[in-house]
Image (cartoon, rainbow, N blue to C red; front, side):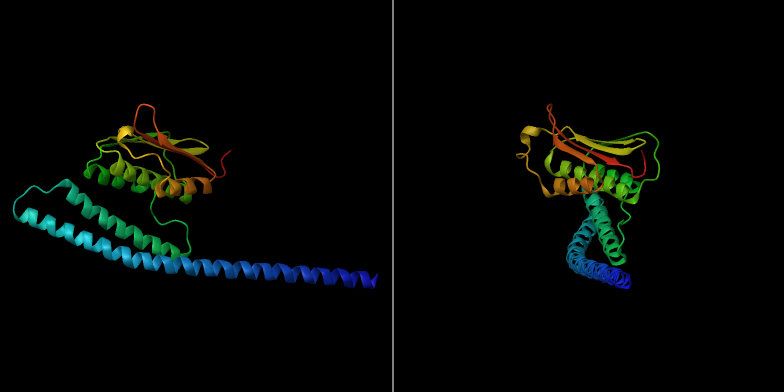
Length: 234
């Protein structure tokens, strides 16, 4: 009886040591991953901030000279300056998030009006439609939805030529659906290939357990549709 009890105590002690070793190993791995993320973030922040600052300065000088000469200021020039300021803000926010080991950087659907305004200033007509009752969303869903719209509008501006865009949000009990359509000419677009933007969208949606559809439409144009489930809702 005593021997059996001693054996049980020994087994329990070994299990506890194994659990502690596993926990320590996980903590070391997480710490190393965090340090690497910070290193990469700092390098990106330094290099990109410099480039963006140069763009902002050049755009500001061009705006100043145009106004000084009494010329009409091109809307695209003002959009460049504003987009540069916004990019610098997001870089700072992202670096701050990584330092604090948080998951949310302040970019969410609350910033959608500003995003749409910049797209319009750059020459892309955008219509936004919201169905359902807007309500606070989990930070990870809120951020993913914003990033999907941001990437989709960027792709339309780059690849769709003279096009219009429609952003639709459906607030449902169990999910948030985000859909972005454009009427660009598919024939004039490059062959379909999974670019980095679409890969990033798919990763965001998959991480949330949602579904993403992205592809050309039969009548022309391109559609991105993401269904993002809301945690804790049956």
